[in-house]
Length: 316
Ligand SMILES: [Zn+2]
Image (spheres, rainbow, N blue to C red):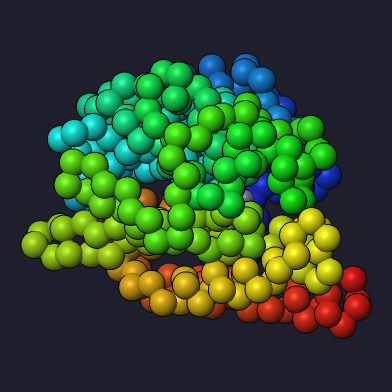
C-alpha cells in the first residue's frame, strides 16, 4: 500500500459494500495451503460489513527481530513477544481473527495458551474485538491505556465518534490493568513502553521496545494510529473536546521516538507486504526503516494539519 495514503481504521461502512465470496490469496500465497484452507473457513464465519479483504486475508507469520513475531493478517497487525515466562500479544483484531492468530502462533511453533498479557493499539473493533475470546482461551491479563478503558469495557458504546453505531460495537471486555502514559509492561526480560498518542481514540497507544539482533540493539516503534477518520470533528467536538490538541501532542511524541524498525496497527502503515517480500527473499533488514518512519509520520501530520485548517476555515 502507498504509505502516502494509508487507510484509516476503522473505515466507515458507507464507503464499502459487504464483501462477498471467498478470499482470493495472491499467487505467492497459494502454496501455503494451510492458510488457504483457513481463509476458506473464515469466509464462512460472521463478518461485519466494514471489513476490507486485507483485514481477513491470511499472512505468513514470521520473526521480525529478537523475540518479536508477526502473527496478524495482511492488514490487521498482531505481534507476539515470546519470553521464558510466557508471551505478550499485541492486538486481538476482529472476532473472526482469533483462529487466524492462533494458527499463526502455532505455525511458528508456539502456543496461544502461553499468552499471559494482551495489549492493544487502540479501542476500535478492528484491533480489539477478538480480545474477549483471546482472554477466554488463554487466561491472559488485559492491559489497556486509561483513556480507552471505558470504550473497551463498554464494547465500544462510549467511543466519542462511533458510540451510537451498533455495527461498530464489539464484545465488552474487562480490563485487568489500567495503563497510564509512559507505563512499562515487563515479562521475562522484555520491557515494552506505552506512549499515549491520542486523537484517533482517546487512549491510542504507541508501543516501543528494544530488540537485539546480531549484537545490534534496535528501537522498535509500533504506531497506534495517527489517522483522522472520515467524519472526525477536529473543531468544536462536543464529545471529544481537545481532540486537535491531543493529535498535536501525539505527533510531538511520535516525532520524538527513536525508530529503527517501523511497525504499526495496520500493515498498510509500514508497507508490510512489500517489506515481507524482501524479507522472504533473504533481506533480514527489510523492516529496518528509520527514514520510512519519519516520512510516514510527517505525511500523517501534514494530513492532520490540512484537515484541521480546512475545518477551522469552515469549509466543511
Ligand atoms: Zn482505529
